[in-house]
Structures are given as C-alpha cells and as structure tokens.
Length: 220
Image 1: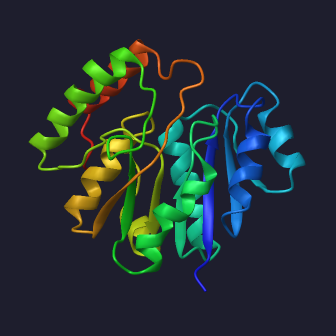
Image 2: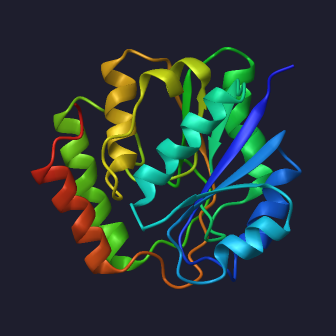
C-alpha cells in the first residue's frame, strides 16, 4: 500500500490551517505542516491538531517550505507526496484525483490545473495578464502545460528525489514544472478547483512571479 504524505506550507494562516489540516488528513496517511516563520498563531493551531509541524525560524518562502516538507517525507517513507496550500483555496476531496495517476503508475508527477474544465474565480489581473505571460515564458522553455502557476500537485518518490526546489519564492511552481520535463519524468495534469477567498494573489504578487521567472534561472 502506497504511503501518501501531504505537505502544507503555511505562513500566517492561523485562521485557516486547522480547517485545511482536517480536510487533508482524511485523504492521506500523514499530514505535515511547514510553518514558514509565521508571526501569528499558525504553529500553535497546527500543532494542536496533532499532525507533524516543522518550523522555519524565519520566513524563507513557499518554495523553501515545500523542500523542507519533501525532505521530511522522503526520510519518512513517502511513496507519494501531495503539495497542498494552507490558505483554504484547494479542495481536499480532489487529492485523490491527483494521486490516482501515480497510484496507477501512469505518471511520476501530476499538476493540478485551473484551465481543464473546473471553474476557478481567478482575479482579472491574474487571468488576463499574469497567467498569459507566464504561459508564454514556459512555452519558450518547451513546457506545454495548461496552468503555469498552481500549488496543488502530487509527486512520486522518484520525482521528489530528482526535483530539488531552488527558488524559494512563488516561481518555484514553474521551476518544478521545468525540472519535471528536464528530467524526462512522466507528467500528467488533472482539473482542480481553486477558490479565491480574498480575490486571490495581489497584482504586485503576480508581477513578482514574472520577475522571478525572467530574472532568475528556474533550472539549475
């Protein structure tokens, strides 16, 4: 039986983290929260649920938090690792959809996509500016996926061992995609739902992603 560990990076998510944990834990064998230097009660609230909580003493960025989680999961026997955001934007019930191609040995890494049929209330700037620019950049690298920036994904053990996340900020999503193709892993996409409770990522945050993609190397 495959062991599935769900990694939840969290920064100042005290108001959401318990709900996210409780949803995810019913779908996987183990939930691990990586508190990325939160200044609120995220660590205390997460720890009170009884799941494993790892802690960065300072805020290092979501990419760094995910790599900390991957390292833990690999050391603790994970066959499949789920990346699941701590802000309550994803649906825990869809974890099984991402895990299925890995369990059936049809893929090594599975990316969730907001553009394959399920509705997601994307903010205007993200939908019509940030996403198209990010897609163009990724296509220049030969990566033809429908969603260039989605934090909901699943990796088998081989993929997690090969893909070491170097970009600490939000461009890690595109880095992971790029490395999946660079290492010739078997890639799949599945439709997922993303719910933007506070109108999603700020426009300035989207510009930061593009800056990371254009200025910093995402393949090392």
